[in-house]
Figure (tube, helix red, strand yellow):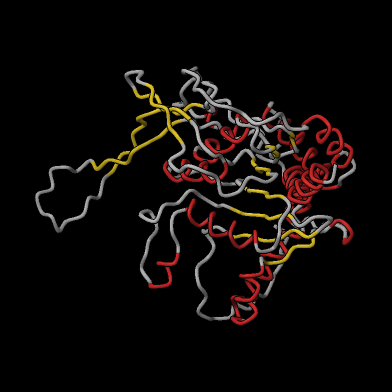
Length: 371
């Protein structure tokens, strides 16, 4: 509609595929904060290993542990685990990840169709990181992401920041439908995903339908119910299960940190734009009518597009941008690799530096550590 034309040059070069694996960085400030982005709870078995270079990746939990080892070399004072837009994956990997941050105990429970409850325990004794920690979530964080966020919240192991999660507290298995195939060389072509169990927090409550509500809420573009599990026709209703025996850590200073965060976000242009977007979305959900005339629709389109672009192309003022760098191990690797790999890495660094939600998360954890 705008008629805008752009010319983009695409260099052709061999680049390792690192888009769907764990990455870690250092946020520099009064104290160095480790930042780990986990895009999904993948397992080694679920990865499509076609090349020798893919063999260096393990499951999500093991990859996170490797990044923590790297970050410890940079003497981090706190850690942010980013589960935004993480749609879940392997519950086993979620259990393994939970064990990295808690010493011992129940991390969740599962209930099958017959009502039988199984408590899931930390599979590994001891923890790998016991410092101040934050988990970032939003409305697109689902399933295994909610498993981790809920466990960390119940144990007072981390401050949970962001938007209320998707609300999927169920576990599925993928089963082949064409089980009559007698030829072992022929692959299954038809599958069905079957919900077999529901999982629950250690407290006995569920993330199903309700999601995980953050300790400190930040305006979230995916906060509307239309993006959540509860909007699905087949969504299961929430219920309760048996509470497990667990020992939470001391209460975290949530209220103090929440008040200071609100002071900052109320003056943030980015969060003002998010709230404006949410208000506009709510109007349409309540049945706002758009007359089907070209002039009226074009005005509506331009308004929506301008608001959307202001969020997607948001660039923080120079003084508000994060000072981010690679961890020392990766920094050395990128310095020697150069080329397209370095360009891709620089684009990641630039994106992180202008992430308004992460900037606020960093401010919160800095308040906590420097109190």
